[in-house]
Image (cartoon, rainbow, N blue to C red; front, side):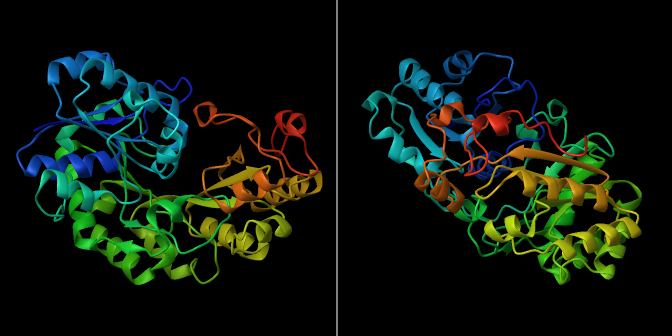
Length: 393
C-alpha cells in the first residue's frame, strides 16, 4: 500500500517546524517494515502543494495527526482528499481526535474521516498495516531533518527532540496530556534511548537532544541509567541535552542535577505556571512556592540553565496573582522565561470550569492559536487579559 502521513499546518502563519512528528515517524517506520511505501509531510514547511503529492503518490491510506492548534488545516485537508481521491481511507489521530468524532457528526459525509484513533495509535495501526510493535529505533530517513529548526533555546545545532517516556501521573487542570497519553508513565528501555541518540549523532549529525517527556525526572533510577549510558558512550563530550522536569522537592535532588550536568544537560525547562500558591492549588499543580524557589536555586548551583513557563488567565486569576507571579520571577531569576494565555483544550477540568462559568470565548477550534485570549476570569475580562503586557517590565 501507499501510505501518506500528514501533520497539518498551524491555524496561524507558521513557516517553520521545530521537530518532526514522532507519532508519524513511528507509524511510518512500522509501515515501512511491512514493505509499504511511506511518505511523511509536515505542511507548515512543505513547499510542494498537497494536491500534487496526492496525485503523484496515489495514497491508499492517509493518516493525519492533529492537535487543537491545527484543526483548520486538518479539516481542509479532509475536504481536499475527498475531492481529489475520494476512495482513500482517511484516519485521524492525535490530541484533537478526542473531539473530532463529536464535531464531524454535523458535517456532510464527504467531509468525514473513515477512522478516528483516540490515544496511542500503534495497536490500531498494526491492525491496518500488519507487523508488530518492536520499533527500537525510528527510521529518520522518512523526513529531511535539515528542514527542522529545533526547539528553543538551541545550545548546539542541528538540534532534535525525542521522547523517552509517555504519560504523566499528575492532574493539572489545564493539561490534556493525561487525556491523550494516560496517567500511567511508560518508560522506554534506556539502551534503546541511547541507541537512538547515537544514531542521531553519528548517522545524522545531530548535536543536541531535547527530551520532550512531560516528567523526565519522576523516575531517578531510569533517568540515571540514561545519563550514565550517555557518559559511557562518550556522547556527553559530543552533544548537549535539554530536559523538561518538575520542581517537586523529592524529584529535584543534588544527585540528579550533578549527574545530569555531567551527562551534558545544559538547560532544564520547568512548568512553573504561577507565582501564586492560591493559583497553583486551584490548577492542582502539586507544587509549592518554596519548592519552586529551591529547584531554581539548586539548578543554578549545578551550573544548568533554567527555563520557566507561566500561564496567564486560568480560573481564579486576578491582578494580585499576576503581581505574585512577577515577584516570583524576579526572585528565582530563570535564565529565560515565557508565558502564554490559558488555552481551554477539549475535555480538561479547567475548560469545564470556564464553560460552566460562562467564561470561555465562543470561538471555533479552528480559531485557536497562541497569543489569543480564549477565556476570561471572574476578575479579568477579555480586554484586561488582551492588554496584559507580561512580567518583569
